[in-house]
Image (cartoon, rainbow, N blue to C red; front, side):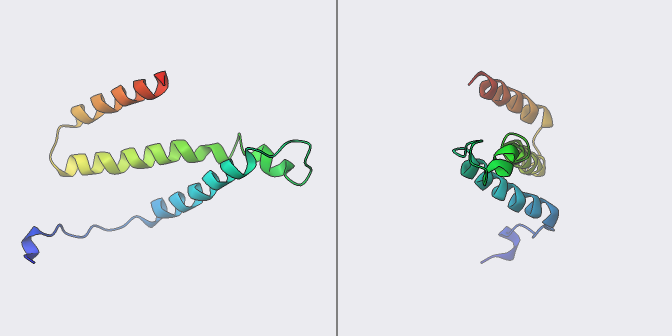
Length: 97
């Protein structure tokens, strides 16, 4: 394989990986506590975390995906205005949905 065709390896940001791992556990927490009721005394603390702490996972994954997509977009030499225009369009569609 020709070495000139392979993209150079970039430095990995392990803080983002750690955040993604933590948020993956939060997603499991969202699904595990959804059916728990306030009457169940064992699940009460976890049920209280669902609407507060665990719900940070979904916006985090949206932001993380946007960060990586924007980075790839800029590395390919494209205009940032096009990216933000597309992002606003998708944000509007997501909000409408």
